[in-house]
Amino acid sequence: MRIGHGYDVHAFGAGTGVTLGGVFIPYDQGLEAHSDGDVVLHALSDAILGAAALGDIGRHFPDSDARYCGISSVILLREVTRLARQHHWQIGNADMTVVCQAPRLAPFLDDMCQHIADALDCQVDRVNVKATTTERLGFAGRGEGIACHAVVLLEPASRPG
Image (spheres, rainbow, N blue to C red):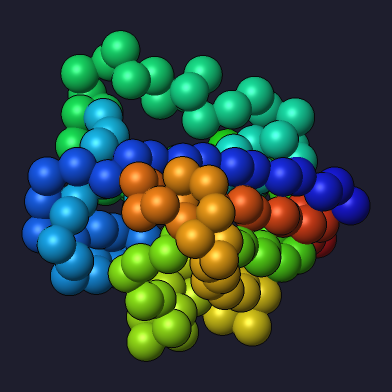
């Protein structure tokens, strides 16, 4: 088995909501990013790539490449999952912690888990997303942005025959 950790952060900017874990959440701001700014899926992608010893998300999907401008991070996560499988790894479990003062995420966490499980092509009971605040400390506590930590366990993929 292999363990990977990922971390991502994006600052708030203009917009009418944020996409986290593949779920759009209405809010009075958006996130500044080259892609859709989904810190949950970016951190998760980095964790998978790290566990599989395949580099990081910036290596595979550089923000200098116009093909990735505004792209859905679900597409990137599916590609990362394909790469991991190509190297004979599958998801054992994935656990993410979103760090923000706002918006309130509790009503959206179950949908995030389902969207992520769908993108990873795994059972939803292998995926967990939780949210926490920083008690108004640091950039997240001041409402300047959102961060996410992800931890992944990869298992050897079962091979036919």
